[in-house]
Image (cartoon, rainbow, N blue to C red; front, side, top):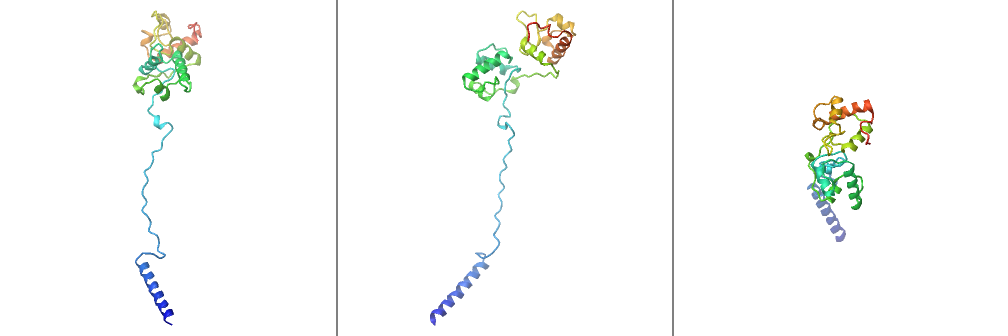
Length: 205
C-alpha cells in the first residue's frame, strides 16, 4: 500500500507546483503578451523614373553647351544645335556601341561618350507656344536645325527660318531676326506661310 500512497503524494505535489507556476505567470492558458509592434521604416514610393528624375536627356531640337559637348565627342560640327545631322551621328554611334539607336542622348549613350551628366542650365529648349503646322517645323529644321540664332555663311539669311532682312521687314518684323524671340519668329513665319505657302523656302523641306 505504500507505493500507491507515495504515488498519490507525488501527484498532489506536482499539481501544487503546476498551480504555483501558473499563478506566477509561468504557464497555463493565459493570454499571450502582445509583442510591441516595431514600426517599419516606410519606403518612399518611387515614381516612374525616380532614380533618374534629375537626368538631363538630349534630343533633336535641343540647343546649348550640352549639345556642343555631344557634338565634339562625336566629331561633328559643334554648333550647339541638335539637328538632323547630330541625330544621325548619335544613331550611328549607338549602333556601333550596341545601344538602342533612337538618336536620343540618355544616360547610357552619354556614359558611352565619356561625358559627365549634363547640367540643366546647359540645355535650351523651345519656349515658343505658337502652334505650327508640321511643314513649318520641317522647314525650320531644314533651314537652321531649329536654331533661332542661326546665320547663313554669307550673313544674308538669318534666324530660325533664314529670313532675309527684306522679307523679315515685309511681314512686320523689326530689327534683326536673330535678335527676335523664338515665338516671334514662329509667328511671322506662320504669317508668311499663310500668305505664300512654301515658296519662300524653295530648298526646304
